[in-house]
Image (cartoon, rainbow, N blue to C red; front, side, top):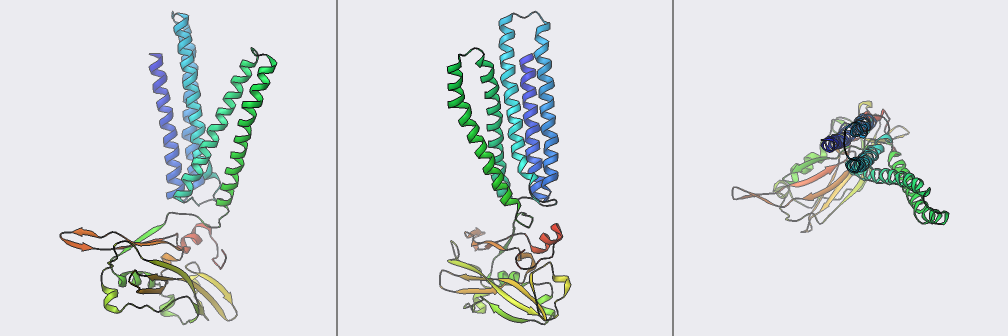
Length: 348
């Protein structure tokens, strides 16, 4: 009965640790509130630790109040010690998983990939540190029964190298998280857009909120090249079976003598004498057959940057073949500005 109670307690604690990990991940990456996610996770982890300590203390005391033989009691206490150590080690692992969410600025989060990477590093380092502490304590206990030569041999060949490895791991994790946290913008999940014709893709790229259609500007510098596809080809479905041969992303500079302030957070701007330069990306696609599509990206939703562009494998639906293009974009600039309350200029 006591062993069953111990097993149930261990699984409840593990469940609390998993809830902590998932909650920190969702709040930090989906809601862009990493610090809040960290504290929510800490609450569940501490709950698991307190439950483990209280229940193990009760189970350690209770068998001594019953008429059990000493061998059975000693065996149960050894199992209790192992499960308690395992549960507390898992608590440290869970803490390492959520610890990287401390570093991003307030009201920001981590990209999902960065979150998993640094959480994994934190979990490994935390687990190694706890195992190191456990090993040192056990070594100290056994040292009373060892001779001096054997004790120093264990210290030299076991504890000291272990400490060095853990120390270097902590330093590497701190440097990596510090570099990631120094990026001056919140890192949110990328958004995606699907198009089934070249024309619909260009319509999405060129969509603007009125800046380029309602206000006067002068185009000064651009990496845009002439599109070689005719209008009929642009209206046709995207037919490449594998992917685009290549695509490049350049820049275009538009000069506005009277730049409207409502667009300050939508684009990268460079103040200049007599007006403002607006920099937008230029996407140029080279197709396998040599055709070229090139277009400036006026769409504010794509001003965070283009992450990926590729055609998808053809899908056969009701004996007809449909094709699409996958376009991934990073966090828009206006969301970055809203999250951090910054004025976006070149270099930010």
